[in-house]
Each structure stands twice: as structure tokens, then as C-alpha cells.
Length: 203
Ligand SMILES: [Zn+2]
Image (cartoon, rainbow, N blue to C red; front, side, top):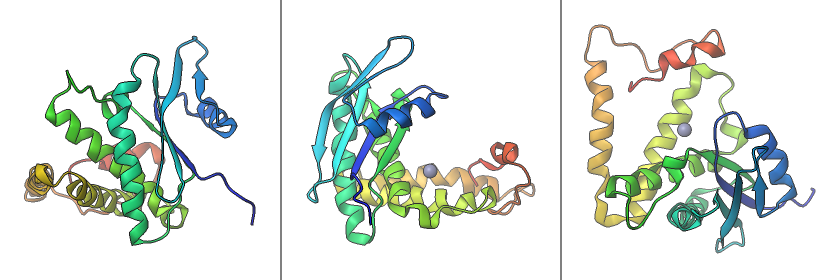
């Protein structure tokens, strides 16, 4: 089997830029310059216990704000590995508000949000290609499990947050909706990819 670089990058990105970013990732540079000259760099680098390189690319001047996400990702990889196989190679892109955390100016809710989002996306990585759903109809399986397990890992990393109380708060909305006569099954047949937004509600 071909040797594969075991690297995972977290990247702040605008939507629609993924393709150029992927080809950049393969070259493994520390700096990424967009066409409009906006520059991102991965000052933040860590290695997991197993030697998996993890990097967080942030806009220049905001590298410090990527530390939390990087730290969470590295620890999450080590935890997920205990449960089984990992797919560590890859690139995960995030909105700036979901990846960056400022020690001075961000709120406690921001910190929890970054932890939940990073552990959620790394969970998708952990499932690997084997359990990627065949079609959007089964999206709930991926998302349901990634959501649950993100709280499990966040709880392990930040016990003092008692994050399961927030899990209840975050999932109760779905139960409210589900109590209505207009509720729908968790699994909804999707006939066209453009319809997926219609089922992405709290249920
Ligand atoms: Zn997800």
C-alpha cells in the first residue's frame, strides 16, 4: 500500500474556495495565498501521540486565535483513535466564527462552540469513507452520530463545562418540533440534492 501522509488541516475559509484549497493541501505548504492576495498561514502546528501532524491555517495576524481549535483537534484525534480506525488525512474547512477563538474578546459560548464544531468535524473524519452515506436520505445517520459523539469528546476534554446539559438544551428544539402534528420522520426521502436544505431542521 502506498505510504500516505497522515496530516489533517483545519482551515478558515470562505465558501466556494474549496477546490484550489485542496490542491494546495496536497503540496503541504505552510502558506496559502488566495487570488486576492489574502494570506493564510499555519503557524499553529501540533503532532498527536501517534505522530499525526495537525495544522490550523488562519488569516495572517489571527494565528493565536487558532490555538484552541488546534488543541481540541489534536486531543480529539487521540480520543477517537481509542474507539477504532481513523482517517487522519485531509482538510476540514470552517467559517472563521467557528474556528477562531480569542482569549481576551471571545465569550465562553464561543469557546464551547469551537470545541463542539471541531470535535464534530473531526468525528466525520474518524468515520472515514466507509460510513459516508450513499445518498442524502441517510444524512441523519452521519449528522446524528457526529453530533452526539462531539458532546462525548467535549465532555472528556472540558469536564467542568457539564456540556451534556447544553446537549439537552440544543436537542430539545427537535423534540418540540417532533411533538407537532406537522412533524416528519427523521429519515426523509431526498429526490434531488437541491432539496437537502428542506430536511436540515432540528428534527
Ligand atoms: Zn456534520
